[in-house]
Length: 306
Ligand code: GRG
Image (cartoon, rainbow, N blue to C red; front, side):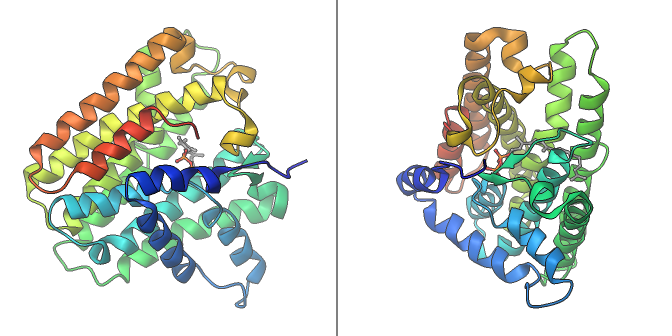
């Protein structure tokens, strides 16, 4: 049932090679592997479940944003890699919980059976919790300076809590059956998707020792990019296939969810995605350093196929 013709790995490098980002994604995967608890330690089944989703083929958007944002303000990949992996762990945590039967009830993720299908609900829930804790443990042990650590912790925790992933998911659940509203939809996705994008960019800026205005410009970039990315996600849910995406398309429609295409139509949603992507690129004008790769990522997010 799940043997996916998921060609993600075969597809993404084409894009990443073009934009020079393949090596960054490989670096993230290698460091993630080192930072996740090994399967030869107990409780090994828990570690297997954590690694199963966190190391599965994904786009690694959020860690790439951390690394490229650090470079954009004059920092290095080395200074930001552990925080980049921590943010990917949090993203993986949210995917595991999102797929659970009590939330979105999805059986396919990243081209594989969802974590709870493979390991059972209890273990999947706990693997998510452990990834969350591991993320903060990684950041606290990364050797960041006393000026950097508190703002980095603040950015990441804010993106997860009520103003971020959890709050967005709750608003999403509670909006079922309500009158569709573009304002509410934007608020939900600013929290569910945008907040972690903003945090990734800000954390990269902080660790790269960017100035206040530079970090603020990166934040703006992440906000618009998150919107462009989510609009593309909604469009793909309407138009793509499980084989291409590695998750079940059409699920928004089945669950009668409010989406950008359902509110704006396919063409209207495409136009909104284009505008958000352009707005994100405009925000980069406030940054003197190398921003070409961030701009590529912005275009890729709006016009992606996976
Ligand atoms: C407590 C962190 C936490 C979560 C619980 C379930 C939940 C609350 C929030 C759901 C957040 C969620 C899954 C938002 C959707 C964001 C999104 C667009 C996910 C897909 O991201 P991609 O396309 O996935 O970057 P890959 O697999 O490529 O990494």
